[in-house]
Image 1 (cartoon, rainbow, N blue to C red):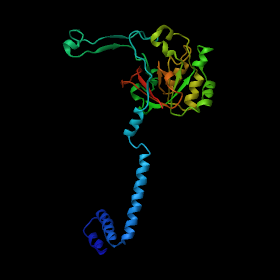
Image 2 (image 1 turned 60 degrees about the vertical axis):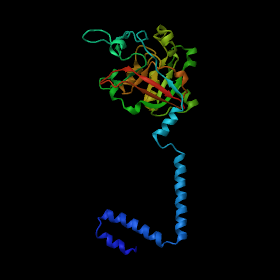
Image 3 (image 1 turned 90 degrees about the vertical axis):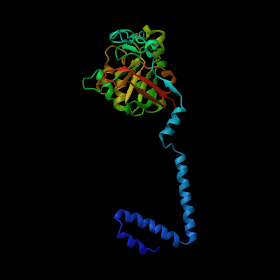
Image 4 (image 1 turned 60 degrees about the horizontal axis):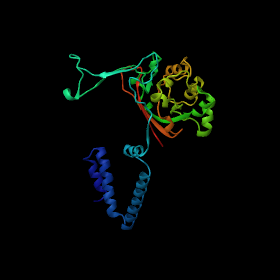
Length: 302
C-alpha cells in the first residue's frame, strides 16, 4: 500500500477516524519500507523502555492491595476499653444499664432457644467508655458525630509520654515547654496528626475504677492545646482520662470543641505505641446529629 491511499481514505471517514486510520496506515507502510536493520534497532529500544517501566513499577506499591499487604504485616494495638454497666463514668451522667431486648408487646426477652436470636437494650450516655466528643457537644454550631469528615478518622499518630513527669507531680498539666522538649528528641509534631497524651491512667480503668475517676488528675494545659492546634496544626487530640483538663474548669475541652475539633477520651494501651511513626484509625456509629458515642480506635504500628 502506498501513501496515496491515505488521501482516498479521507473522503469516506470522519476526521477522528481518518486521523487514527492514517497513523495506523503509515505504521504499516513504514514497517514494509524501513530497512530491516533499523526495524530491529527500534524493537530493541522499545523493549528496553518497557523493561525500565516494569522495574520502576515493581519498586513502588501501586494499588490498594499493596497498601493492604503492608498494613496486614504490621502490629495492631487496640486503643479502646471494653465497657460495662460498672465502668467508670463522669458522676454527672451515671452508670449505663444493659438488659435483654424484649418483644414490645409481650415484654418477653428474646432468646436463641425460642426465637433463634438475642439482642441487648442499652441505656447510657454517649460519653461512655472510650468515646468521641464532637464539637457539637460544647458548641451549638459545631460539627455533630455524623458530620466529622472521614479523612479525619485515619491520621498519623503522635504520643506524648508524660509518665516520667508524674513521679514528681502526679497531677501534671502537659505544657508548651513539655511539647518543645519532646520535639527536641522526636522532631516537630506533624501537621494533620492525632496527638495522644499517655498518663497510664488507663491501667486503673478496670482494676481500680474509683481511682480512675479521681480529681485532679494528669491531663492537658490550655496553653499546650492552643499551641498544638494553632502552631502545629494538628487535627485531633486524645487522652486517657475522663476529661481534658486537670481541673473542673474544662477550659481545654471547651476550646477544642468550640474551635470545631473533635477529641477522643478514655483511650487505652498508649504505652504500647511509639512516640512517632504509627497511624491511628478511629471511628464511631453515624448517629444523626449525635453529640457523643463510644468509639473504636486502634493503632497501626510502623
